[in-house]
Image 1: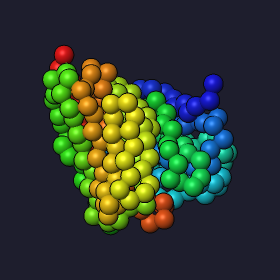
Image 2: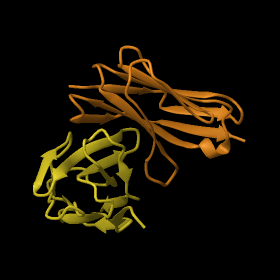
Image 3: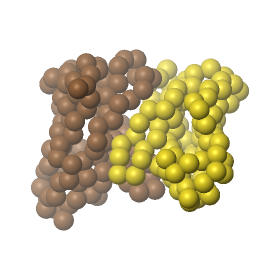
Amino acid sequence: DGGITQSPKYLFRKEGQNVTLSCEQNLNHDAMYWYRQDPGQGLRLIYYSQIVNDFQKGDIAEGYSVSREKKESFPLTVTSAQKNPTAFYLCASSPLPRDHEQFFGPGTRLTVL
Amino acid sequence: GQQVMQIPQYQHVQEGEDFTTYCNSSTTLSNIQWYKQRPGGHPVFLIQLVKSGEVKKQKRLTFQFGEAKKNSSLHITATQTTDVGTYFCAAYSGGYQKVTFGIGTKLQVIP
């Protein structure tokens, strides 16, 4: 089966801890994205990557970090510097150029206590 | 920077009624995509519009791209309970380098 997987589905962390969200795709897509979804705010782009070892900040990158060491993997770290980390995080991928449709993973709901 | 307004934010309709959501940009777009997110799910691609004035249909869904490529709409004819979900537009500009999602329109269909 081809697709995008995100794990875990639900994640709880204590305030002040860094946490890494996993995103893996076997669609052979070059581009990968991380979005944050909050009620009433739609999807906001955190980071995106178009090629291995390269990534760009999106609209709300502060408090987050990413890496792209492999084409199929794009993990997101939510650092303690992120002031409001509780949210639903969605990973997506697409072929290049970037105006192709995006394929989304099932999402990770992060709750910081 | 690019701003994308999507209205309405919520819509309740009786089953069988029509539904429309609108997406308006402050800048000219390269193209626009529409996605549907079922409750508890993730966004799923519906369609992409590229040409000025383009109209595309998928069964009961009609998608339009404005002549000036600054606005778009999604119209559902005779809604069904399976149409429940949140509909998002994704607006591309700057040579496809910039994508901005609308806030989404949450559709509830009353049986």
